[in-house]
Image (cartoon, rainbow, N blue to C red; front, side):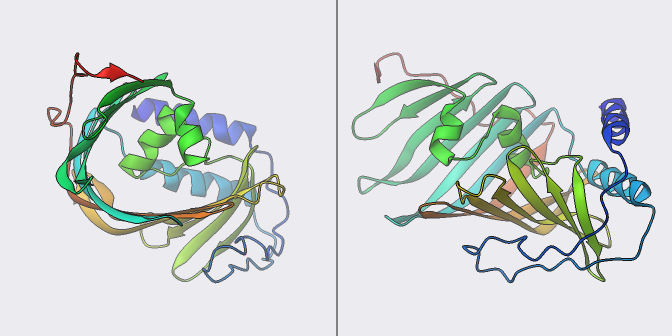
Amino acid sequence: MKLFKIVLLIAILASCKTVKKVATIEQAIDKKDTTQTVVITEAPKVDSASIVRGIMMKVLTNTIDFKTFNAKIKIDYESAENSENYTGYLSIIKDSLIFIRIRGSFLGISAEGLQVKISKDSVVLVKKVGDKYVQYRTIDYLKEATQIPFDFYTLQDLLIGNPVFVTNNIVSYRDGPQSLSVLMVGDIFKHLISLSTDDFRVMHSKLDDVDIQRNRTCAISFSNYQPMGTYQFATQRKIVVAEKSKLDINLDFKEFSLNEPLKYTFEVPKNYKRK
């Protein structure tokens, strides 16, 4: 895997020509986001290619590599319609399967109400309370449910705490006393990512649609890093998604471990109706 990271880094750098002149960017944060607008001011002329190499090396160095991952998560969910609190149980086989079990209050009953199995091309949902059923969907269900272009690998990175939607098209940056802010533009999102200057952990990730007609935004904050093997793991995440309406999700990882036997798998009940 380390060889893969080196090859990936070489590919990124080979495709990176000199970064465009650093320019003032005053609309890096969408108006929906109440976070204070980040202003990236013009900097003196520098070896921008060298800065790109340094940034990508620091991001890749902190990328969490693993074979299996287990976690217990406190989940706070709030939308325009309602707010709920759940406990999530998560197991991942890297690049293969994601198992999620959700426990909370369903129909006034405290129970495990939902199970989800995600592979690279499909999603299986099992509803375990009330009208019990099993539902089979393609991986595109992730995009439909979140209104964000998630595939298996993007969701896997988000859950493990690795940066998502990273592109080599870096158009501006600011090296501040406490954080390094980098603005990159991909095919779908403008991505403003903030790294801590002491160890270059991801602190905040702000995604805005390149297509201004969508007016979609997603902000992800990472905090309360704790040791996890040789890595640092963000045990608290705040995800805010907004387009026509706003969705807030807070994830608080109460337990987490790498490369141990899976804790939370399941089999689809044979007597459940298919929906």
